Length: 326
Image (tube, rainbow, N blue to C red):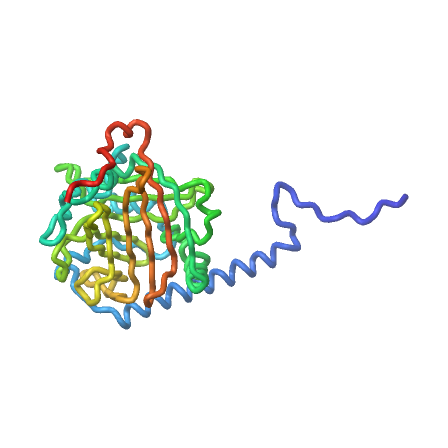
């Protein structure tokens, strides 16, 4: 029998020569779309944002990222540029002292002790995550994640629950002044356990926002510039804890997109229709959980649910799970 024509083979999963031009065209198209999306955001902030001198609004001061990949290298870059020292303590917290949030209308003592412990020792907790995306939000998040977030490894929102089915790693990175040991920035790096891809590479601190009575939690996500979120603390009657970014004007809590505008100036766009809400609570079985909702124009875009479990070495150190007396 005459041998039939042989089929092209693919070695070690490499693309066949016939498929390579198609892959190259798709990559070029994605690069073009990503360039226009990123450039559009930059132009929008430059045109509509306020031009401020950094020294005149210290509450907005933050490290800015460059175009391209952010990922895990952002902490090393900040440390190098600002002459800081990096350390990764096993029990580090996002807010080293929860009392830093104390203000005229927020009493940290009213918050469940287990919640306080998480914020002061977040690195010692394991995270499980579930995600739910609205029909409207799915399209906009797909654009953001597919063309921008995955490329720069930042703000890589998990659109599908399958992405986080194996969990999310959590690492707290402290950037210190070498001489004094003062914590300048606290980084919270979260990655998908299934792939190792960075989901969020953020910087956490507490700051007094001009229009808010209580200190806020400030979260900075360096990107091409930065995305800053300022969250007001809330003490609920049952001992649970809230963080809310639904301020209504400049100088209040909310979302601020920042880009460079010269050596000493920044362009800042306040987006008052983009809100984040966290509700951290202990459920009836003593499990620590968080509901995280992101909404735009009053519509829920994505809802994330977290289960936070302390490592076995901390089980005995967690405060009793009964809510504090009111």
